[in-house]
Length: 240
Image (tube, rainbow, N blue to C red; front, side):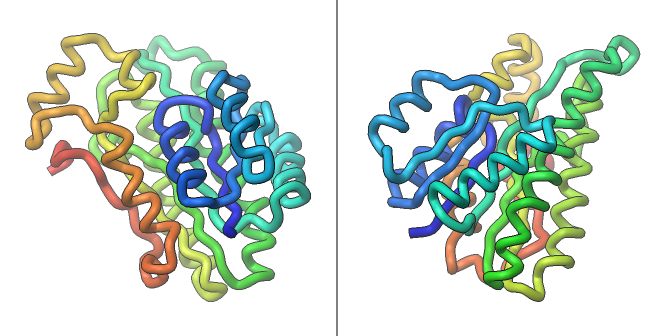
């Protein structure tokens, strides 16, 4: 029974990712800033297979404690899904220092710190899967999301470099770059922005979390042994 860590598992795509692993009998750990009703339900339904810690992923010391707590509670971590992220929609000229720091620290630095902490035991065991949830905006950009796009582009570069570092120990590192999904994050866009995205998407709709789950499960599996350093796009053709 493999152990999976999914950051940001309390809402949006993160909820669906956690559910998909619990349904497949993995032991799952997650963290987020707020304990939601969904988290409480999982704690009650899977007391032996689900661990949760309320924490701020921009706090490096908290990240380290979280990884140690997961290892003590569930065992060595086999799979890491860096899903936690945030976006502040604003023109760069109007962005505050605090807003920029929040996005970069969570989307990029948080993923780097968690990957570092988790990869240490993976290196000793010569096996592991690290999957980053990136975004198509890191490749094509989007007006009003320049800082978010920069953080995701940085995550793509981190994916390729870390794959080279860890490959010799049979640890794969990949990223999944969804297009715009029907989650809380796209709820921050106005109707005109959503219609513009749909018009530009060859498949003519926003994505659903379920459109991404299958690829994440594949990358976490034994069947993906020879795939690493890739940024795999699931966007309905938006980036064509």
